[in-house]
Image (cartoon, rainbow, N blue to C red; front, side, top):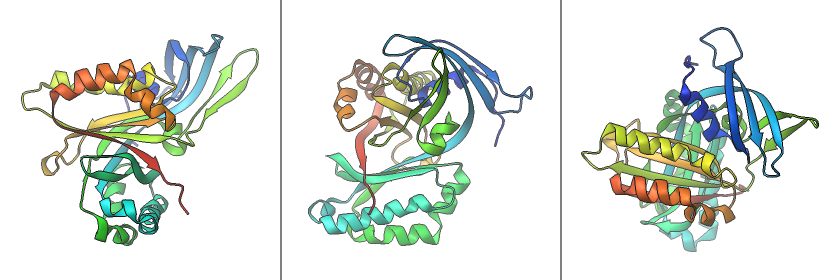
Length: 292
């Protein structure tokens, strides 16, 4: 694992990966080891919870570099063939067992968008594991059932940084230190995966791009009860694909989707900041299947 320098980005990455329904009033991050090569940190924070009680938080966590892989499929023929759809999606879902895959979801989109009907979201520890996944016999067998129905697909592979607990288990856990000590664990059992892929217009400056990407990462901080986790990044294969960047937001539930689209944060960041700068833009919401 590569070394990570302690910068302001450390806190931003940690905040965007947390599923804590609280206002972070004051934060201090310290290394768990005296070594500057350590990626392990302690977080000390004061949080104002919804009931307005103030807690002091101490949490040991690991910031890790990962690779996110959102995919959108055009498979219109499956919409009227539920048995074939179940076979295709269960086969894709079996890829979650591939060695090294951290998490994987597949399913139907809540609403068809630009011909896209289904999607997949996977998280890998690094680019090498993704390449092994692509060239494996398991992958070749898993995608076989979808080939007769596939009319197109787009994907983005990008590096990102999230909290280690969230990456491994899809959850964030920590000890709240107060007069009543307990462990707060937020699972994501009914989450919807919001995926946006886009390409910026020629002439958009690097500073403008970075500003928008930072704003996207911050959406989980501005609406923590709706957005459980966000990642955003630049496509590793920009020269060979349609979309140069992607943004993924793990939403709390299907009911949270409408709240997300109607929120001031979405309007300000995506509608007003991001979309006017884009040559291409598509977004969709994936409802993961419960595999059989």
